[in-house]
Amino acid sequence: MENELQDKVKVERGVLNSWYMEVQRTKDEADKYRKHRERTLGHESQLHLAMKEIEQLRVALRQAEEHAHYQSYDAPSELIDLLKRTYHIEEIAFEVKRRSAESAMLAAKDQMNKISKMQRGFFGAVRIAHTGCMDNISELISSAKQRLAIVQDECEEREKRWNRISSILDREDLINYSSSLSSTTMPISGNQYLSGISHTPSNNGINNSLSSGDYLC
Image 1 (cartoon, rainbow, N blue to C red):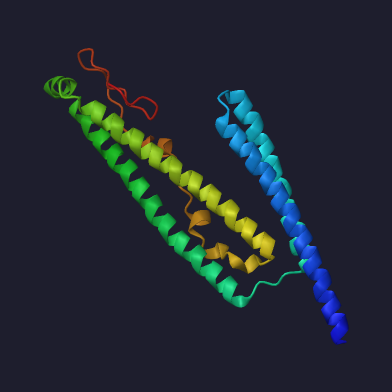
Image 2 (image 1 turned 90 degrees about the vertical axis):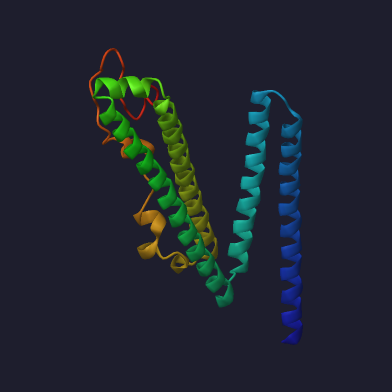
């Protein structure tokens, strides 16, 4: 019985070493494409090498999946608890960043509405035209929309990454979707925040039409 166990351990170690060498070879191949791409100047050549690199990484990922299925790996409870804690901390940090980006956009919208109301009067329109207020509002909105776009990208990346981890470990309970902030409070695009901005007619040739796609006076 003891000899059988020893033989089984040797076989599993052999398979593990063989798998590791194959994955490492594939990763080395991907690194070769990456280094070549970094030394290449042409955009088309860089894209071609990037696609080659991605393909090698996909191969390595498939090999890792096959090994995981072969080993029938059961993650220890301590690891699952740590992953759940990490997911929860990421969730809190993401929500803070999302709220901050949304607040920045709402503040820019509020300032834009105030400028819009001021433009309705002749003296207000003249004063605004000579102070560069609209340029400042344009910068605020552009910055806020960029922050929202970054939050959106992070949300999508985070969701894909944790779904992948959950799938690899075969633990559907790893992510608690009922409390997931990324699925219940998805970030909103800047255009949706700007949709309620008031529009006023032109005064003395000054353009007061303010829309989400036109930030300049």
